[in-house]
Length: 198
Image 1 (cartoon, rainbow, N blue to C red):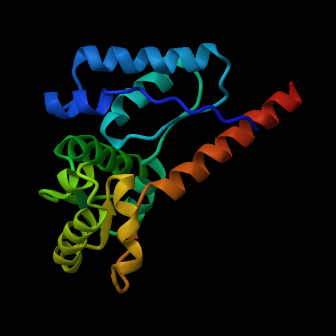
Image 2: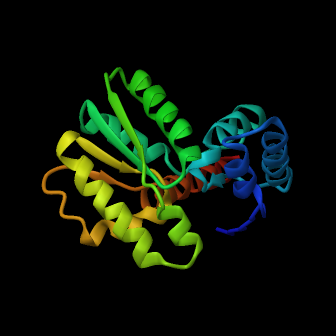
């Protein structure tokens, strides 16, 4: 299995500055997905939760498996209970994450209520190189929301580092990196198996 890592420099900065995905940013990202498909990639793994809707659009257009990092997490959250809490350090992540959870619940035939919150100041701390300050804010917000929900979603991969310090009791706390990568690996194995049968 060969891994190719691509970074679209400045894309997230553009999304943050615009308060969400714009037509120009959408087309820029779609071009990146198309290039990967044209290069012969069997699976494309989209790592950023803020651009998930564009990944789904690319999947429909290209006929190549495009895995959103947060899809497996969303499915697990919808199976965990009705009341889902979502924390993010960027407001631009909340809209696509909420939409994914609602769509996933509908597909699974589940009813969910989604409570979303931005962890104010955490992203700025991370950008400044203050990982401890970021984590402290995320932990405080998670501890405040946990008693109110059946499941807590930490919507960005950068938040996963707080898990060892978060005593959630019986409430599931979900992050996307591990489950997203495992899903992408599984899709790659399926593609390899199809090639073997061809």
